[in-house]
Amino acid sequence: TGGVITIDPGYKNTGSCESGITFLDGEKGILRYRGYSIEELAEKADFLEVAYLLIFGELPTKEQHDKFHADIKKQSVVDDDVRKIVDAFPKSAHPMGVLSSLTSALTAFNPSSVNVDSEEDMYNSVVKILGKFPVLVAWTLRKKHGLPLDYGDNNLGYVENVLKMMFKQPNQEYVQNKVIVDALDKLLILHADHEQNCSTSTVRIVGSSHAGLFASLSAGISALWGPLHGGANQAVLEMLEAIKEDGGDTKKYMAKAKDKNDSFRLMGFGHRVYKNFDPRAKIIKTSADEVLGDLGVEDPILDIAKGLEKEALEDSYFVDRKLYPNVDFYSGIIYRAMGIPTDMFTVMFALGRLPGWIAQWREMRLRKEPIGRPRQLYIGETHRSFVPMSKR
Ligand code: SDX
Image 1: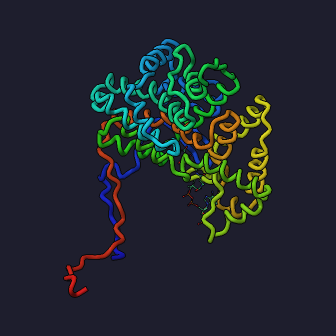
Image 2 (image 1 turned 60 degrees about the horizontal axis):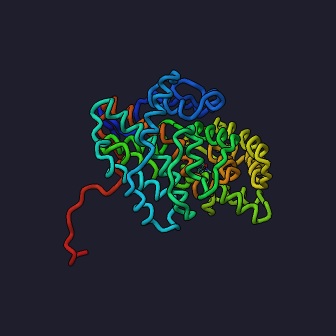
Image 3 (image 1 turned 90 degrees about the vertical axis):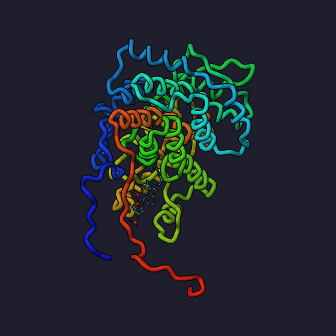
């Protein structure tokens, strides 16, 4: 009615929340996990160390790190019936849809993971999913490529084991490539958490109804799938490929991105929070040069990406709207150099974001937060009386 809108200030949980896990400053391009800068963590820590930091709040001692990894290894198998679910999917199924379904299905095989009244129950659910999720990631890839659904090797490091499960070929010895292991470890750290983004907010709000951790994570995976969110890393590669096929004419695509009558957006650009460079994008861009150089990969797509970035940073449309490359702009180029198929890029994002989702879910449960219930601004019809159909 155009009147004054008052929202009860005492109303709890209107969709925003207090959290002590990740700090972002969008204007200054700052990202910190539990107070540690992303630059330092990407350079000096490993992914499991960062997972422990995000979930429990402190960098682990060696003993804590080793026990955490040992507890995770004990959980690195899934019920054999899960294979039947994987087999039931068509090969054409998008890996994110398969992964979300398999993650939710884990509840059926681990019913105790739903009631987490004690911190011990919570810890058991956390190590279960950290142990089983890499198996689901690998099986999602292997299903598409008709490869046997194997297990990994518990003598390996966490990231080494992920790569071996994904890429080991039948009857062939799998040889680790340290460049790829280190690059993936860094990429997973860079994706590990990001405050209250779309998928993390989904995990928190589903978890706030006391649905189990696995069901909450499954919902988060579905949210991440979208091309405006984690699905952007796949969309970036598809966009760069299209530009390459179109003769590398970046100006044409810049014009499309600025045309209000064209739904095309420059994928990998812009961010809801960062109105400066996404600090992760800077690190990934440097890493892309290093990894492709170390692997001896010449990829014209990287040159097209750099040309597009240069043009956008000099174009008033992008500068005025503070549209900079985000985490998704360069990550796919590295995944591609590693031999990861394009439709698995967002699955790799989910693998990286897993500890962040877990940490945010655990914080919400430990703080005994009320069920999420965002309010709305009603903009519909005012009250009116029913009209019989004969009179409509
Ligand atoms: C992630 O939240 C997180 O933290 C997410 C994430 C994480 O780690 O969890 O960082 C991961 O999701 C990164 C974002 C990946 N998505 C993309 O790269 C998709 C392309 N980007 C956009 O769709 C967009 O920039 C968003 C969705 C990322 C942000 O959207 P906003 O903040 O809602 O921006 P907006 O829609 O309000 O746009 C503001 C203006 C508009 O123009 P005007 O109406 O002012 O004329 O900027 C334009 C938009 O049209 N714009 C773009 C653009 N992004 C915004 N124009 C062209 N290309 C783009 N990419």
